[in-house]
Length: 137
Image (cartoon, rainbow, N blue to C red; front, side, top):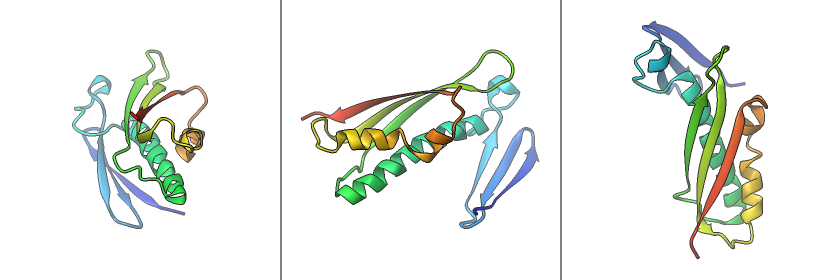
């Protein structure tokens, strides 16, 4: 089990410290929800967790298959719903994979992206749209 210590700092800001490494990060409420938007909001971290989980999962598969994925990137858009209760309604991901579209493991990599633990952990009402862009031939 991993423990993460979180502390409310006031002004709608929190600090989270990762137990094993002692690295920390700050969150701030977004501007549209009474914060300053000075850093990641908690829901931004959900979107970030999804993108980094997909890239990490792809990296694990790539290591097994001896594929170089250095330079793979994800741009993720997060949309909040407009009605109560406030929640993430949609995450739209554009995934760039720096290998050829005709690569023999393309399907396996795409399936792995859709099976990362964060993707599987999000509530089914959070729409997740993944699109893949492969390097030109």
